[in-house]
Image (cartoon, rainbow, N blue to C red; front, side, top):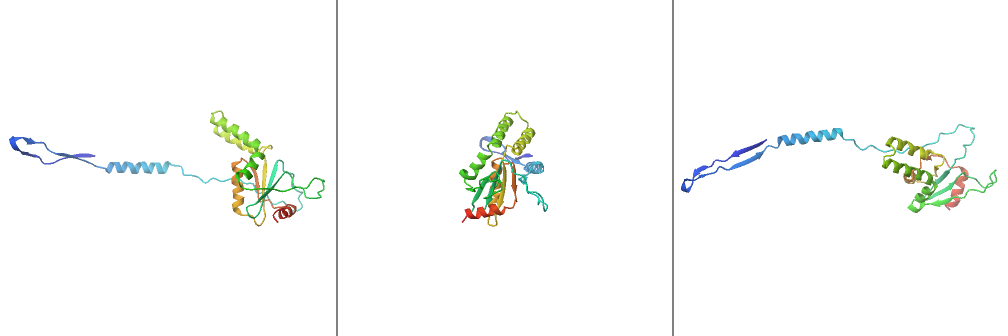
Length: 213
């Protein structure tokens, strides 16, 4: 609280005039400090701290002995990570040379982590899902879709059969950094079906070794 202190005044000067008393104001800051601590305590207790964000990841289960080969992946793109930050990939099913179906053997193509490399490739391959989510985002911004409905429909779009499925395979010379960078790029490009941890087939590995010689 404020207090007004009066200084002694008074005497008479020339002509018998009485001088006015001097006054000074002192503000007590104790209530202000108490209020500041109360507000600080309130905001600390009611604030929501940043929560760590995680990425959903599908890891395949180990198939039992004697089980049939897995079915073909529809709209699949397989990436093979190896040394020196190199990325090789193929679209669709892998066919070795001289396969039983008589189909042309798979040819590995190379890309990189540049915007004109991996990002452009995923954007082109996953164009349907990206356009679908972009349309849902516009509806959500215009209040045509509730937030919960928007999130559910966005997840459904990435899981649709028209969206791509990405398989990431690494050899013993690939780095964790490359695998993490790959997962980050998949998240940016709205790739919802992604599988990591699949072991490279012997035919894939042999073809990869030919490419990196």
